[in-house]
Image 1 (cartoon, rainbow, N blue to C red):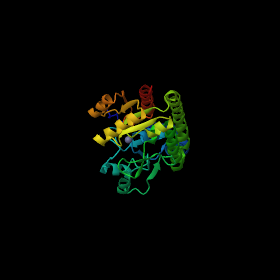
Image 2 (image 1 turned 90 degrees about the horizontal axis):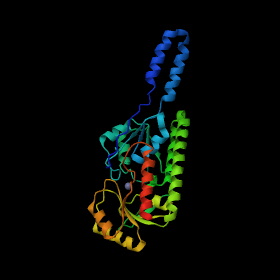
Image 3 (image 1 turned 45 degrees about the vertical axis):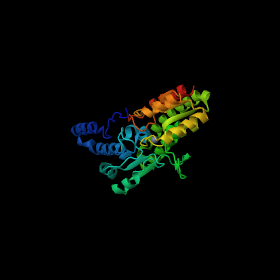
Image 4 (image 1 turned 45 degrees about the horizontal axis):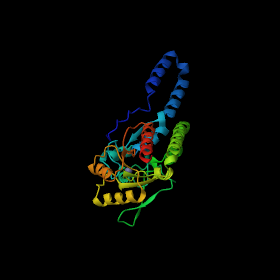
Length: 316
Ligand SMILES: [Zn+2]
């Protein structure tokens, strides 16, 4: 279920075949035009050149692709179907970064593997874009631990997603000013869609403000904060196994906060979730943290609308 389709890669020199044909034709038409054609060809080649961009995992790939559009190619480092939390980098990842110009990341500690990987790649020219820079984060205390940790799931708040897209846009413009107009136009269109999505969330969740829900992993506190809901999670990250303590905590939360529903995730087939749902008499819905799926920028809206519908059903 978690395995999404792989992205169709569109090379950014897609028009090169056309340019070669055009060039051949021009040679036949006469040498008098040659210099202007050469200038033209060079100019075209320059405007079509774009940096080699790598995005770490799904949501960042979607946002970066939305900004880059047809201007260039974005490669995803963590293939859909592989979990980002506790991801272990491979030698191939180091190779990918060694030849990349730009690396776009979510930040906030979710890509823990990056520090060592970037060093191993040994690419002193690599420009890193931290898409969550400037975002007001949610800090959480670890159960049984006094240390606070930053929750990284900012992409699941359609307003913070706009901020991430804008940051990617501004940094790409700074790195690659030749394509500034495309980045600006593409980002604006996507931000408009995110604004519309935010409007839908606001409108549809207003009647259920204050609703408490339980998710499988701790991915939705930003979304909950944005729309006046409250999220409790069974586990912190998807790799964690559910302990009796987790179940106890969830039961307590359910009693204390009048929890309305339990929201599991695609691909999570842990029978204890069904058990918690029936023990606590909580309806079971599916909500997708978008950590895996299809590498098409519009996929974000498809999943978020389905998440909105699940929240509406859960909270009514
Ligand atoms: Zn997560």
